[in-house]
Amino acid sequence: MTPRAELTVPPETVVPGSMLSAELHVWNEGRIVDAYDLTLLGPPGQWGECRLGQLPVYPGMHEKIKIPIAVPRSSELRPGPMVFAVHVASVQDPSLVAVPEAEIDIGAFRDVEAELARPQTAGRLFGSNLITLCNTGNTVVAVRLRTAPQDEKAPLRSQLRRSRVVLGVGEKARVGIALRPARPAVVGKAQNWNVKVTAEWGKAAARETVFTYRRRPVLTTGGSKAAMVLLATVVAGAALWMSPVGGGTRAPRTQTAAGPAQLEQVNDAAAKARQEEQKKAEEKQKSQEAAQAPKKRQLQQPLFVQTTAGSKDSAYTVKKGYRLLLTTVQITAAGTGTLLLSAGDKPLGSLSLSQAKDITPKVPVVVQEGGTVRMTVQCAEGANPSAAALPSASPSPGSSAGAGTCTATALVTGELIPDKGPFSKDDTAQEGHR
Image (cartoon, rainbow, N blue to C red; front, side):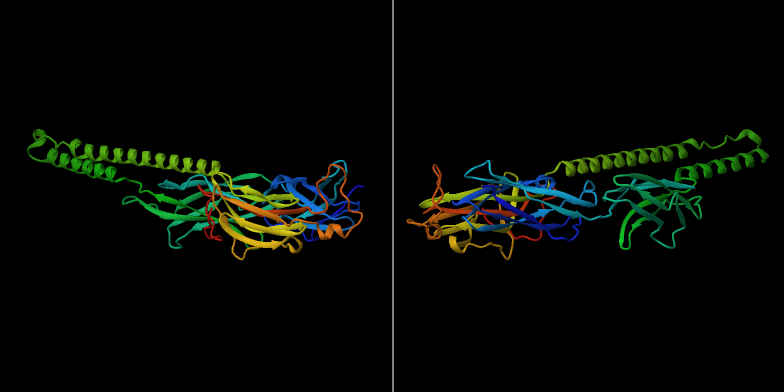
């Protein structure tokens, strides 16, 4: 007989980046004990593990299981209803299938990335920069831009080419920033002023970026020295020309005084330019390494055990380069015996199969690389009281389920965190054991 199944989700709108819990009910309207393979279909099955394990159900009864779904914060998820389903297939007869469907109401979110073309710009009479805006939300966003020097007393004026920009989903826009010193410096040392650019959208959402404007004097140190030497030479030459001696005295040579200072300045400028290029190359390499680094992943790993007597276990081993932050274990069991659950060398709980319940540690448990989450079922010998009480629950030919059978399913839920890279930090969990 085709299994009956029902899938329900909360009616609230779900904003991308949050979680929700769907609930699946499965009825066994047959005459024998059966288990059902569960597979998550649709986009939620692509966000994490699509296999949900097996759910054992006695004849004439029904079981339920909660399915946690982490909705990614992605601009590809457009606002509106999104349909998903669960494929429910009988283990005894795989041709008996039910596919209940449900809808998730995806909400709208707005987010904007702002990136400056240059972290530092320089000039004598004016300067400029560019800011690139990108809509990383899932709906149209209107962005308001403001710019001003961080120091209110700075002799500098900054102005945006556009103060308002409307961006579609995934759309980018570049806005120019014009800088003009209020009082240009003729001579002296270069001065640095920080300029802040603010992008605002919504009531409380904003993104701030800061860059440095280096105001240079009109005459450099070497140029002012050369001008002074040239002026002194002209005055001295005029004095000698007008003196009684006439042009007999040779004018002083000024090239030695001016030449080395200008050459030193050129070498310093070239060294600074090389340092800036090396710094940009290092920043680009760090950005590429961060983009290629492994990221955190949501985990939903089923463990299933079916045995008639003795002890049998099922385990999940944490993959290389990751550690598991275990948050909850959903357990469904039937039979007469004991269920033991452990994470690494740390026991999580010991339960009777007839009184199995979900396990949620008060503090998330961390299982390191190569560690295992293990479920062990110790099945008592003899008849299963629950199955023996149902005279119509005789096993079908070739079936191992029935009297004296112990079954248990554990859905391990948590997060896989890389051991290395920019996404390896985790402040919520304490270190566990392998």
